[in-house]
Length: 508
View 1 (cartoon, rainbow, N blue to C red):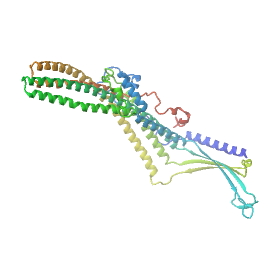
View 2: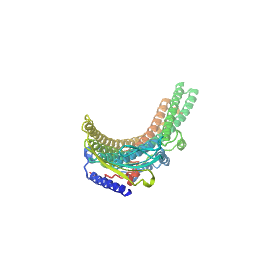
View 3: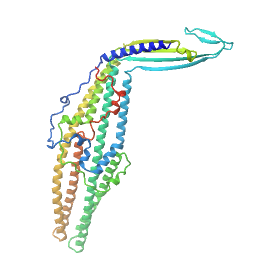
View 4: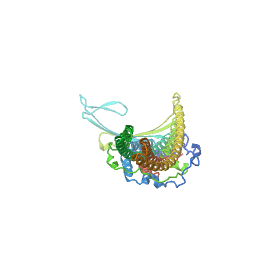
């Protein structure tokens, strides 16, 4: 009867609800994760190097730090990379995998229900009649017509998570999902800073190429002057040959600079998800190296670490490894499962629910001997957690190193830029005087050549110092955790859906 089937299902639901209540009220083996104090990670209260006294960037400035350089081309390239970079696509795919792994882990907390249906027809025997198997296994011969048989079945099983192994697995999967989100943010930061560094390199190579071409033009003029002086008998042919050698040496640097420029532009194209050379038209017109803010401050170390997605990813991996200890330890304890079945059988649809049978079964299993495998798995999980802690601490120390190195690099580049500015101005004046004196025969070509070489060196030194300063700013923005929005849900927006909610959240 339909009423009998309903009673069986109600009994099963009551039993499942009771088991669920006992499950949620039960204990979970293994350690609960506790956040690690900064002192345990070796985080100092202040930086060991003299950080700039200026105010650190605001959170809003850190999110889109490249806008602080006020370069529309740079902004467009970074936005293109955010939209189409292949490394970001890979990181996003891993985030999706981690999300589905969480769903798989959560499925173990719920009953498994499956249905079945069947149809069978028994044809008459040669001598008339039909062989029909009775419920007790005996076979009888019925009338001469064929017999139809319809069946429906419903199976359900539920594993009671008495010692929290499944719940610990959900905790681990959730932490791994969050770590994947932070890994995505770390990849995002890396792509942004790499685009910016290569853009600075491209602009620096353009400036160096301009210096080299200007130097060759001057060397052409010097070669012509030396030739005239040789023809006039004022100097020996040595001056002309020196001028020719200097001109060739200056010209020899041009192909190398163009090759380096091409490598930087090609790298930018690949980072933006395009074929090499695709962004070349955007950079054809030479432009100054983007300079960014005059100086940049830094928050205290603890605040910086809270912004770093790589640090937060390492912390989530430690939380996942801690939960995996409980997963392994739960295998050492008994496992209780409940299963039930409801079925019916009839010759036609009208009588399908006239007779309904059902059964309920509870089973308890316990590993007695496994050759030490289960205990070894628990010890292995503990070792993995120790390794995750060491990795977490190493990531923290590396983050501190990044910030201090960037601060020192910025200060060094600023000092070098100031000195090379003075050197460039002095070398320019000296080269002008030497060229004028050589024209009038008041000095020799060696002196002129020395001054021209010093001018080219000072110009290239100033270009390099400015590029180093911009790269140091980029590195400092990156080290401070810029390039992503911590307020965004980098785990996955679907975590906000009830489907992906953690039913064990807040349970111990």
